[in-house]
Length: 226
Ligand code: HEC
Ligand code: HEC
Ligand code: HEC
Ligand code: HEC
Image (cartoon, rainbow, N blue to C red; front, side, top):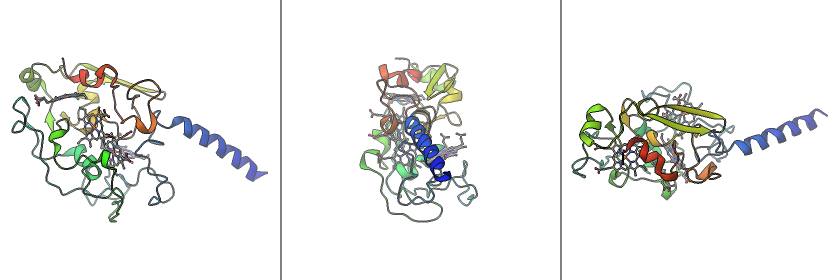
């Protein structure tokens, strides 16, 4: 009797989890590693965070082994029309993303252990970042003036709806990290507020985790006044 009840409850929760995939939760997204052979107890957070590992001295209780790569940045030595000062190397949240996405550290190298699972080629940005949107630029009033075609940082940006969750705010409150444009300006690593990437129904594991829809290039037009 008890077993039966447990099973049907489980059935319901699985169905709910299935529905929720891609609709405002990390479950079912590309960052859901809970079903990987190298994860124990179906944990969701451990590849990136741990409750007690401050050994790396980073914010957000970072648990993934960092990359020691040297990067080629998208800066004004590369593109003369870049007005902002580009950080010499990825920092802050971008450094956290690149601990997996530059392809030099295994996805399952965390908690001090060294793994061997490589990231898929399509998600491997490599260490030459000149073919990626620039990161590490302070987006402030001076840059808006110098560039001439960026929206002021107080412009309202709706980062969309993730399932039943919605969040609206300004460019500075929603999209910048310590005032800077970083990987997480465009992507929501937890999929919490991710919007359908393109057309309605495109979500889940293929939504590219964008915070603002790419329909009509809305994401780009949130910052660029073109
Ligand atoms: C693939 C890596 C990854 C996974 C998995 C992950 N996180 Fe994060 N988390 C990050 C990164 C990167 C940041 C900092 C960037 C940001 O906030 O967008 C962050 C920031 C946070 C923050 C602080 C900022 C905020 O959003 O409030 C909390 C809290 C957090 N994560 C909780 C969790 C929990 C709980 C889980 C598991 C259910 C989890 N994360 C899973 C990468 C991850
Ligand atoms: C623990 C390693 C890890 C970290 C840290 C991490 N990712 Fe990922 N990410 C992955 C893996 C693995 C995939 C799936 C690759 C594949 O199989 O397609 C992925 C996929 C993605 C995708 C594609 C999503 C889709 O739906 O196609 C985006 C975008 C992304 N990551 C952005 C980020 C950003 C931005 C950060 C930091 C804020 C970050 N990731 C941090 C491992 C990581
Ligand atoms: C200006 C916005 C922006 C920034 C900044 C940005 N991305 Fe993206 N990223 C996108 C968009 C839009 C896509 C989807 C492109 C497509 O599929 O057409 C994408 C796609 C991806 C993918 C999926 C690639 C694939 O083909 O599956 C990964 C992984 C990714 N980004 C990681 C990162 C990381 C890591 C950083 C920081 C180094 C970063 N992004 C910075 C907008 C951005
Ligand atoms: C969060 C704000 C933000 C978003 C969203 C954003 N950008 Fe940018 N983008 C910037 C900033 C800031 C710069 C650097 C401007 C400068 O330094 O002159 C930049 C630079 C660029 C450049 C480089 C121009 C050069 O001079 O070499 C291009 C091209 C570009 N963005 C296109 C895009 C596209 C396409 C999208 C959508 C996929 C996008 N951006 C989304 C803020 C953003």
